[in-house]
Image (cartoon, rainbow, N blue to C red):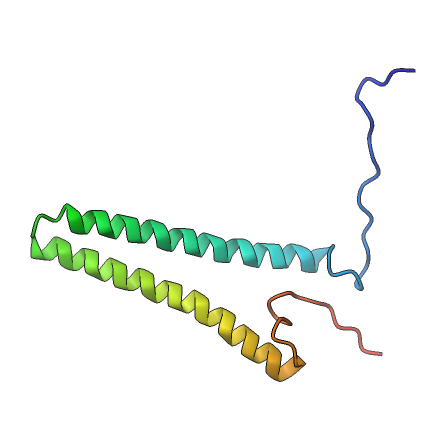
Length: 111
């Protein structure tokens, strides 16, 4: 008998708390990574915008100063995002003896 809608597979089963590749922890890890990627893209767009403002300033001291401030603020934001990774790795190393503990979230079971 032909099917109208095609073949429908079963949904992926939830692996429970032992499986780090599914569930809420996996979702939160993806959200954090997405936010960090957006921060990098935003920094790149700010660099391009500030460079354009610097080039079109035509020697106007106010416009070139504003572009320089925007570049400095973008660099500062990028340093803050990178420092967050370093701090998370240090805290993970100190508390869990694993630098990846806070960057790839896991549920720890106490037995």
